[in-house]
Image (cartoon, rainbow, N blue to C red; front, top):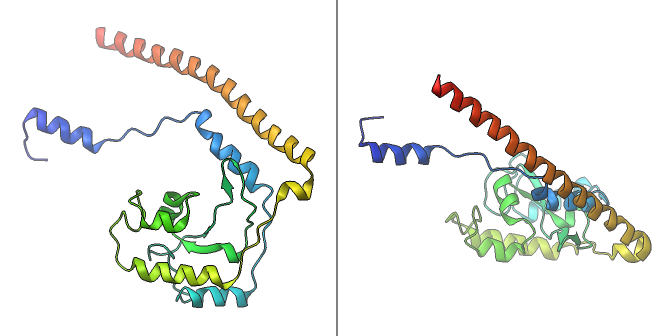
Length: 207
């Protein structure tokens, strides 16, 4: 880097560095809930004929599968309609009628938002937010896909029974409560460890 005034160089250096996000057990609450939902979601394996039909609807070739949302190379198949809303299952399952090829950026950005709303939004990494071309064509393909085969949606609670269903989600709440307690202990330990490191560094500077 060429010579720069100290204040400018300081700003450039600070902009170049990004501290990893602080992780807490409490911040894993949604992950725990998603794990409880994912653990009970049935998986319906598609036939090769169904895969061929979906790729044809999305205008893709088997050897060049692209993200249905942005057109980048696909890394996974994403649920078009979310499996979780308000920390409970929506009733959809993992089946090809509810799965489209996606890239990691789009999958993470969309989350459990309605796909049409998300695609048109300025959300980080959404197709519109990234200023991508060809969005109307991709919207039209996804709309054709939606009409191809209605996805399965059932009331899980009515199948397993209210009592067993409530007991299952009580287990989820208990896990999250134990994580909250563990985080309180972790906060204390982190402070003690940080203080010890600061004290050690201070002693080294004073030597």
